[in-house]
Amino acid sequence: MTNLIKASLCSVAAFALVVSLPAQDKGKAGAKSGILQPQMTVGADGGTYAKPMGTLGDKPDPAWSATTVGASVDGKPNAGAVKTVVGEIVDFSCYLEVGKHGEKHRDCFRNGQPIGLLTQDGSLYMLMEEEHDPRRDGMGIFRQAAIDHAGHIMEVSGTASTVNGFNALYVHGYLKKG
Image 1 (cartoon, helix red, strand yellow):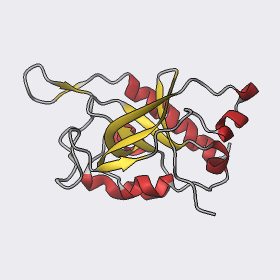
Image 2 (image 1 turned 90 degrees about the vertical axis):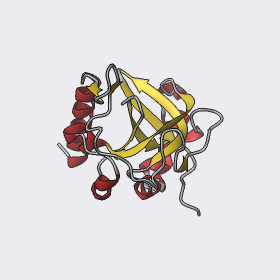
Image 3 (image 1 turned 135 degrees about the vertical axis):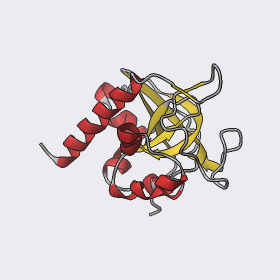
Image 4 (image 1 turned 30 degrees about the vertical axis):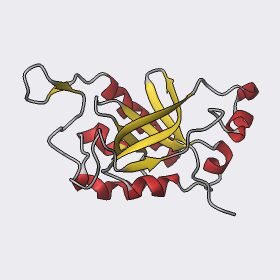
């Protein structure tokens, strides 16, 4: 079994755990948050859920690119809808494994783990480049853009897809130039 397959299986298994985790009490009477380790916070200059630091991704039309449609089975990709989501850019693996996020956890992004987007209600999206063939061929630059904003709260647009409870947001507009 290749390391890529092992890493993918570990990410899927870890994500399955977070889907079943109960919301944690934030300390206020009746207030619940699905965010693990809520004491870990984004720095003052990293944006807020009400006022994100910046934006990532283009709003696509149509939802899936031609390369994704062409790579899909019988030309029919899974259901997807254009969506904009506000959340903190997190290391998907570290967040699911130990709940780490926030400004002090920025260095973990550089070792190839999947990138996630953590919303205010604790929902978690895996972030990936949408354009199928360029992504497959290493022609995308989204990963570095996400790493540059690790631990920041950002507004991210792309094609949202949920399959068997797993949320993904496929981000458009990050191809290497010629």
